[in-house]
Image 1: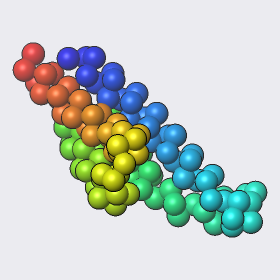
Image 2 (image 1 turned 30 degrees about the vertical axis):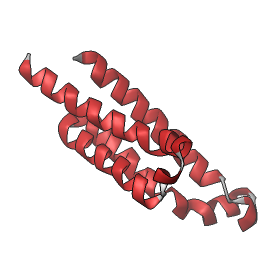
Image 3 (image 1 turned 120 degrees about the vertical axis):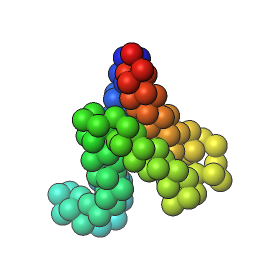
Image 4 (image 1 turned 90 degrees about the vertical axis):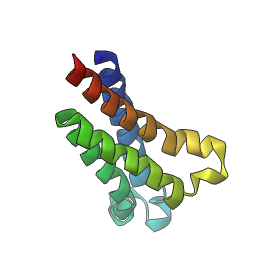
Length: 113
């Protein structure tokens, strides 16, 4: 259904964008602040760049992109230890999991029509 795709697209795009900006800015003050601190802090954005690439892929190829986004969500559970705190899990890991599943559902519902 079209609603799955719409929710998945905007949920994943907003989630990836917000976390990319957060990862870019947070911690830059300890590295000197300003543009220099942001540049030195830029390696923290690598996971969120991958998520952004997966979101772009999902807009083009829903099934493959949805699979990658779902796997990304599962990896965040382990890598960021979101299983230790429900709130962190709901903020960091849950949106990619839901968006990935919705992309996959959208692919199959479109295929069946």
